[in-house]
Image (cartoon, rainbow, N blue to C red; front, side, top):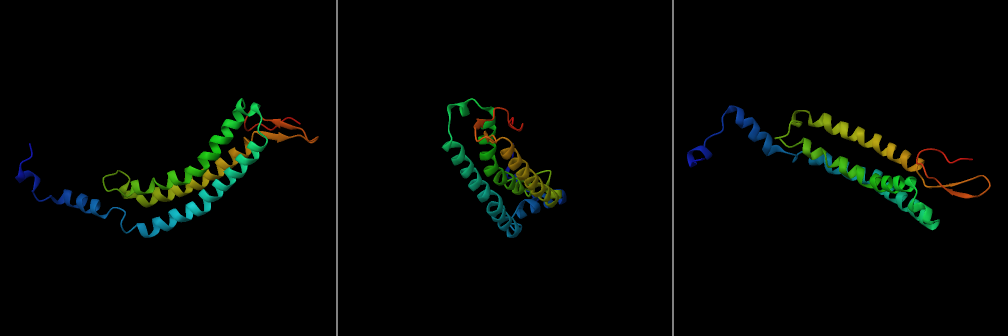
Length: 156
């Protein structure tokens, strides 16, 4: 059981550095994190949301009951929604690296940079997957077809 003498004791040399690191946290790093977060939202979230809205409206204008059965439509809608929330989710990983209790505190800037690299790669990959799984395709004779298998091109 903790007695008042145990709880009020002076932290030792090893504990002092841990206490100081806990006190620091993300305070000074907010100067670069908040503008970076705003930049990611401006350059990735807003364009992806606009693109998802345009794609959804295009698909829903040509709505047929077959789209309910198309796996390509499910992949398309899920990836379009995910592309809007993915940058925000990845950016919210960065403050976790700055908690002094975490194992990643010593390499917090390296992990933050790796999150940004992963963000750019995953945004490109989701856009490619959205393009490859678009559920409607038009033939050269003007006939509209529903793509059943995502990523594979429509037959000619």
